[in-house]
Image 1: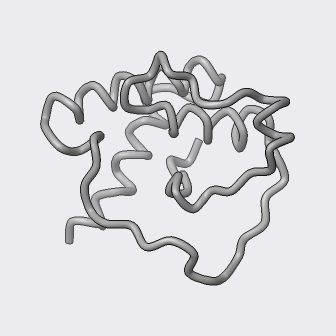
Image 2 (image 1 turned 90 degrees about the vertical axis):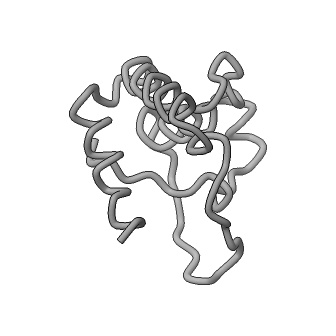
Image 3 (image 1 turned 180 degrees about the horizontal axis):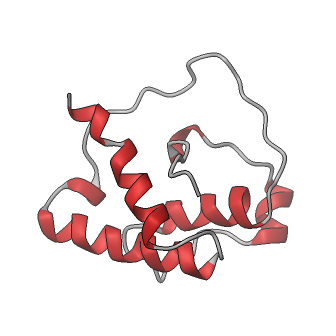
Length: 105
């Protein structure tokens, strides 16, 4: 609800969790990873552990921000995922995007 979400390549989960809660919902063309994280962390509140070491180095880019059309599509899918997982709505979507602004400055 605060807008923070770990980067999906840094999120490791035991197979049993996928078996119990399901995998990626492929009806999302861009936000399947976001939906999965919302479902696991927000809706089902699985137990997590922070590892204070670098396991993944991400590069800038990707499908979700490769064009204005994709950014709009991602925002629509993010909103649907928030609602379907009973996490929030427009306020949560705003916070999610607002928190990312610091990446550009």
